[in-house]
Image 1: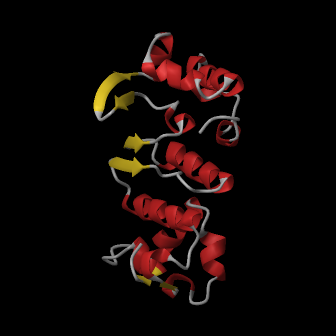
Image 2: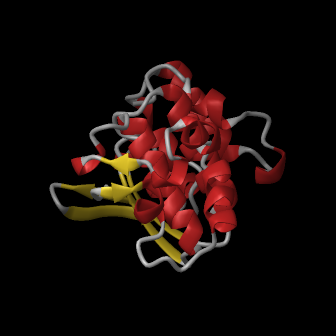
Length: 185
């Protein structure tokens, strides 16, 4: 985050209206928090956003991306070091607000990427597998399949259920359930 106001951190070039800024803050579940700050959008952000929690900083960065409506979005460990509630907000927002965007997600948590269209598995900086999660899990001796199994039996079963569900639109679980599976880190 940048030294400056909350608004500057969301819209550094003043390209959007306050109404648009508040809308993305609502989408990122930050509206109540920012509304309670002294000076609200004019609240001063300290160096590196040190006056915000790690989760709040991630949500502000996500709100900035929501405001710009990118066609391609790169997310590097977007849910690392955040609490479960913030993880849930980020995961839900990624899957809804960025549904029409191409997402490149770098993650160590398998639950973060298990329902993506394609998964690229790297080992020591080299590409070892690249395919849909369904195809990767179908390879019993595959690297990705072994990674899923290493999450523990209940978590692996849940991840398999997500991938092999017949209709992605009628999945019976929520992002919260996915995030709370034991051993999913």
